Image (cartoon, rainbow, N blue to C red; front, side, top):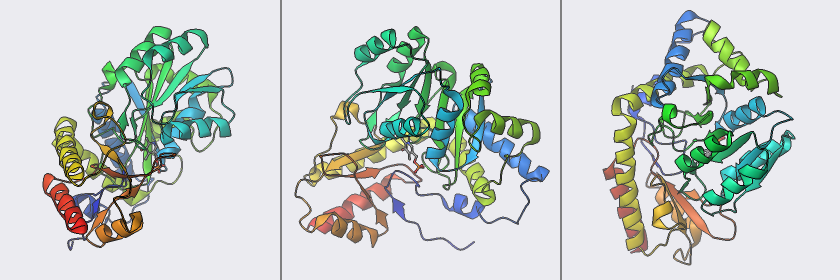
Length: 361
Ligand SMILES: *Cc1c(COP(=O)(O)O)cnc(C)c1O
C-alpha cells in the first residue's frame, strides 16, 4: 500500500496510528458471522485482557461505539435502582459519568470540584455514611491531564465494600494497569486512545464476581454488557453489526501494543511528555496543574495572552505543518491541550516544539 500521509495528532485520541494499523483496515469483504471473523473477535478480546493483566478473573464485552458508549454500557448495565454510585467529578469526564447517570435516573451522588485533586479522607467519610454500592471515577482525567489516585481510591473502596468503576479511556494501554492487583470491578476504554487503533470500538472489562449484578440490574438494550459478553463467548459474534474493518485495525494495534509492552510504551509517553513540557516552558507557557498531579500523558496549557492572533491562528499554523493541537474545556480558565497518545516518537515532539518556536519568532 502507498504510504499514507502521517499527521502528528496531539489531540487526546483518535491518535496517530502506525502505517501497519492503517494498512490493516484494507481487507477483503467478510460477513462478520463467519468463523474467520469470530476468531478475530476472540483475538481482540484476549489481547485486551492481556494488556490489562487480568489473569482469568475478568471478562470483556465489546461494543461498536466511541468510548462514551462503553461508559454508558457499564453504568446502565451494573447500577440498579436500589444501588447508589459515588462519582468523582473533578473534570469533564467525571461530569460525563454524572450526565449519563442523570439521563437514566440512576441513583448517584458526586464529590470534588472541577480541577481539584481527590481528597481521600473526604471520600472515605462519604463512603462510610452514604450506603454506596459503587464508586465511579476517571483514571486519567483528560480535560485537565490529572492522574487520579487509583490505588488509594481502590483501597478505600475495598475497605467499605464498594465496587470500583474506572473510566481508563486515556490511560489503558499506555499506562501499566494490573487489573488482578487493582481491586477494580469495571474498567472501560476504547480502541483509539492509548492502544493506537482506529475509532469505533470500546469495551467494558468486568470482574467475574459482577455477573450476578449485571444479570439483575441492566436497564439498557444495545449496551447490555452481559448479553454482549454471552454472545461473544458462546458464538464469537457481537449481537449487532460490528465495524468490520476497524476490528482488523484494532487487532493489529493490540498486537503492536503487546509487542512493545505497556511498560515500554509508558516510558516513551513520559519521554515525549517531558520534551513537550520543557519546550512549552521555554516558550513561556504555564500549565494548569502542579507537576506532581500531572499524568505525563496530556498537558492542559494556560492561554494568558501569548497568542496575539488567537488560538485558531496558532492551531492553523500547526495544522498546515501536520500537527494537530486541541482546544481546552476547563471552565473559567482558558487552556488548550496537547497529548502524547499515539504512535509518536521523540523526533515528533522535537519537531512540534521546533515548529512552535518558528511560530513565535
Ligand atoms: C476520550 C474519553 C472518553 C470518551 O470519549 P469518546 O469521544 O466517546 O470516545 C471518555 N472518558 C475519557 C476520560 C476520555 O478521555
